[in-house]
Image (tube, rainbow, N blue to C red; front, side, top):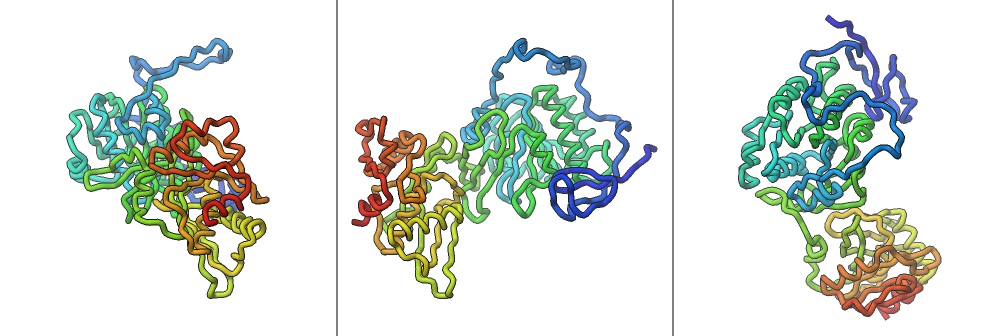
Length: 461
């Protein structure tokens, strides 16, 4: 029997130590070291995955090469038959990539991955589950629609047994639900520990890179919203996706926090239904669909998420402070930026907001940090303060500076096109954006302005 030894691992960053220490010298967190029993590195376990000699993707010993002599061919991506996931991944699934999807319990991660597995009709897909039985997965699959003739289900948590089945099946895509439930015989600690998560991910990473088979991992998250396990887990994978949303609401948002093969600012939107997740191709219509009449405290702002323009509803409520200290609350918007805009309104526009509570909300559950929403936030606050509604055919897209000037924003042409498509007739923009842009070709009237006072006078007189 191999000799065992004990090490201490940081649950936050994965750093190891021979003894327990209070503060991690790597990440600076306190009381994060836990004791784990591991095997010596020179021990081997029968059944660990090794690339077959006949594998077309097997690599030989690496040698240094001059960068100019390296030939690069752009690899074709797998079409997942899901336009929202394709957009977030940067155009499709890259062969040999390792993708990590995190989200809260019950948000729909397993449903999304099983739906993707069922949609890849031309490929052999292996869905590995360490959390659910075959019968539970079958029940969910029947709700999602037609069955996939080459979708294989494996309920196993031992990586050595998993790789035996993979070697026999030779799938085109592998999905693991979830990485925290797997355990490897190379490490003696329990499943979900720092060393187990790191070792299992390393084995799957080696398999993906040496065979060219994409692997999708589902990851649990902690109570603060970060993916459970060591931080090195996010460094090892190629793409990190966050599946967000309120379990009590129907809409789900898929974000990219890391992507080696594309942009990290893309956004995918789904609607949870009884038959699975429905792709939302035009989110602006949904975000604005509940506007039946013009009410005070509501303004429409044009924002961008990656390459996708969105028109969102900014809601503000301004009431006199009855408990002494005024409250400042923002949902879906940076609270510090809200305080800055309120200070600009007091200093530059003469509004008295010091004795008022201000509540701000971005409708639809979105979290946005686009500076182009500044003028919409200011307009919504003034509208609620004076109880004057903003016309329903007006939208806004501009940044507000500390001196009250209206600054230009990027890619205004896409924002104008989206507003025109949804039937808006007027848009307030920065006068610096109007330079070099042919506003006559758009079917929407643009108002170039240079000061915040000009916007407020144009909206409220």
